[in-house]
Each structure stands twice: as structure tokens, then as C-alpha cells.
Image (cartoon, rainbow, N blue to C red; front, side, top):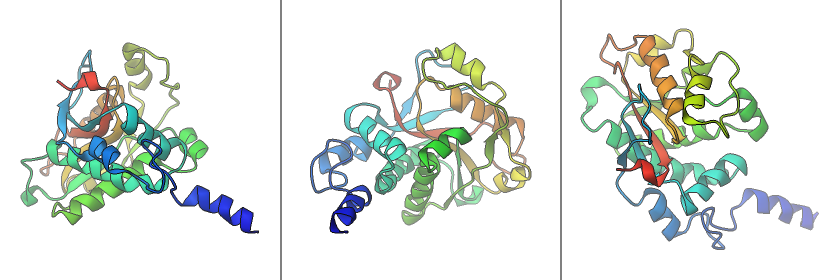
Length: 237
């Protein structure tokens, strides 16, 4: 029984930094600096696809940041949602610096994952990070909430291994706004959120789906900005 409890505790309680493996800490100071220790910056993939919204990212995707995202997403390190959310919150602030209380709360709209991927992982990593980001924004005085109003309405192929044009074609027309979501989005400023941007194809399609719904006639953004945790280093510039 004691051995079983130690095994379960090892899965539930963090024993090493998710970024570098340093023992006895969930996130070491060095990896925290890599994740959210710098101001979020404008990011553009190369090539930049037509229809990509203005994107801000908190960190470069590599080394510790890559390890942290994968530990949370693929290995279920749930405790990392909070620091990843803190990083995303910084990118959201950079994406909507001029929007005050007069335009209502910031509405964080996650780019949806395929349902099969969520089932395989046993959780929705991006939604968890977005909820943590909204909590961080509220804690620092920015009204914010998460609105998971986009859905995939048709099958899309696995994006791994596809070229940038193939990813755009694969996702084109794949997302729709959930029924009745338009009225919710009219009450604030929508910001698309994702954990990672590589080619920008997912954000292009998410922005298209929101703008096609014409949810801005009561003060929201026609073409929402976007915020992500990380992008490849070459996307900063």
C-alpha cells in the first residue's frame, strides 16, 4: 500500500521542474524567466499567411518553454497550467493594451482542439491555460473570462508533417461559432488564445470564424487580436 501511494504521489505531486528537471520544484526560477520573465512581443510566422490577426507571444518555443508546454499538454502536469496561464495573460495584455473597461471584459476565445485529441489526453490543455490566464488578468485588475465558443464542425487531418499551405487548406472552413455565442461575444473585447503558433493556420481560421459571425456590432472587435504562450524564435521580429 505504501509503495502504491508513493507511485500515485509521484504522478500527482511535482518532484522536478517541468522545464529543466531540477528536483524539488515545479518550476525553477530560470525556467520561469524563460516563460514569462520578458514582455510579450508581436510575432509573425514566416511566411505570414493572409488573414492572420495581430499576434503577441510571451516566449520563444524552445528548450525549457517547449518542455513546459509538452509536460502540461502530453504528460498531464496540471500544476503547470498556472504559470503557463500567467505567460498567456501577459500576451493578452499586449494584444489589447488600449481596451479599457468601457468595452467590457476581455473575452478569451480558445482555438479548439480536435475532440479526439482531448479524449486521448484526458483533458483540454488550452482551456485549462486560458482559465488560468483569465484568473491572472482578473487578479491584476483586468476583467476577463474564457468563452469556448468555437467548435470544429468537420474532420481535419493531423497537422503534424503538413506544410504551411497544406495546414491552411486543411483548416479552411473547419471552425464555426457555437449556436447562440454571438450575443455573449458582443459584451466585451474578444482575444483569440492558443498555446503555440507555428504557421498561423489555426489562428487564421479562428479569426475567420469569429469575423464571419459579425459579433462586433455592439462594440466588440471585428477582427480580434490573438495571444499565444509561445512561437518559434524566428517568428519574433
